[in-house]
Image (cartoon, rainbow, N blue to C red; front, side, top):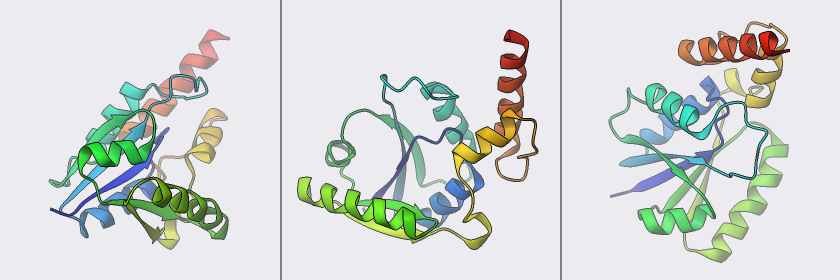
Length: 164
């Protein structure tokens, strides 16, 4: 079985993420969407459980995609799960510079290959950090994320407004 992982923080999941996940699902027998959980990172908008739930809902249309959390090294997760490939979406040359270095480091740790997938042009500008910033200031991000993620963003920022 050809198994791949699409790792990330997914805070929140966007249509850009789902584009890469869906295309990977067409290339591999199984795709594991792996949410990195780092307890020391306090700057997340959504908890690990919230991100996992959103991803499960967003990926429910693909029978060969499952969502899982991981801590520690991605290469250790890949080894434990029998994963042979890491799929990384690339938006721009700047992504490539960083991801190439990471791919080479991962290759030095294990025999997992990294597959670079160019983002579809319609999502090449999209980043979770931008989505959060726009949503925080009341901008419309409804076309950039699934509807239920948009609703969660609106609720989260309404909560923070009422808490102030």
